[in-house]
Image (cartoon, rainbow, N blue to C red; front, side, top):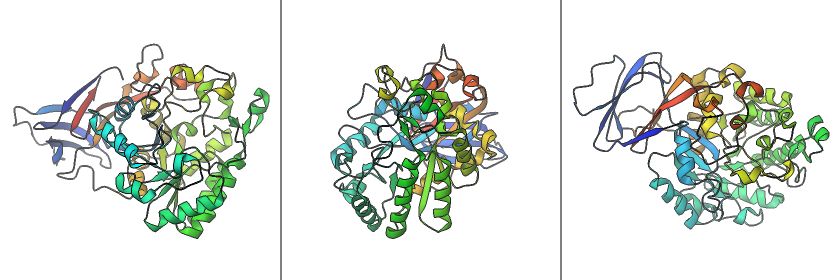
Length: 447
């Protein structure tokens, strides 16, 4: 993304012409007035009578609803050397995300109303950025000992609570949290990670970690924790979303839980659909992920789980870092991949690796996340609905594939595609580009 142009939609009329609309096989004209969808015309009627209208010719482009990211990190407050609400929300919007649930592991942690209000206020101050939605910290300080005032944080603007990447050791605390959240219909977003197994690990337990001498994280670290979560969900009836699963066995466990009728959903981080632990050879810290990249068999099972509907959503797992975060031996580097600037070209490869239609992939990034949050919207092009969509050119030359010249919008410096060509990572050549995005009363175009 080399350049963006923003316009307020207040007191202006925008006309998007000849776009192929999500869920339709016909081209559509969309008229936006004062930030709202005024009308749509599938017959491509002449809508240019207003001489002051701003016309966007979307011929050959897809008009898609704004994506919802169930797990991103903006690093603010407290870690602004890595990123900020301003930088990361702009990067998210340029990748089609209109809403981002931000992890509560900020400094201070999102366990008090003042921090919630700060995040929401800073988000509203950003011109032409995604809406940043704070997740409540499940326990005070994310220490796993004392529950946060979840009802108060929900009223302040947190639709969901999470323990971020910090495990809870005590089954009593976890049980109380799920019972408490269930009493006022607050869903929980939990990463299945045992507090003891592989606690000091940085790579999947397997031949690669053994060869490299890296401390490992066994699959059991995920599956043991997930078994406990499933049983507590069965006991409490809490709406439970499992964040960023990584193993074949986890897919099977969640499928069994769903077949039993439990209120469980899950997502997979987009990079786990492509990368495996084989890429750690050479100690490349770009592949150090908090949720580890596992075997080829695990990756393939994640793809199958996504295509069969066991996995409900795709998240970015966006984790921007500064350069200093990678200047250490592999185990001591800070885990996480900056995702937004490369999200679209990876997303466009998901149909090929899963057999899903692109519309189905978009549903896992729009409709399904909204349902999990309990705010499934009316049709995104409904008359008088706020304009919240983007235009995607799936055949465009992709800036993100140009290692030498691409300038990411995110502050994060930590993505393998900054340093490796797509073909060297087992990817198809990168393609696709967001051309424009409407959200929160702003129109952004990208060149």
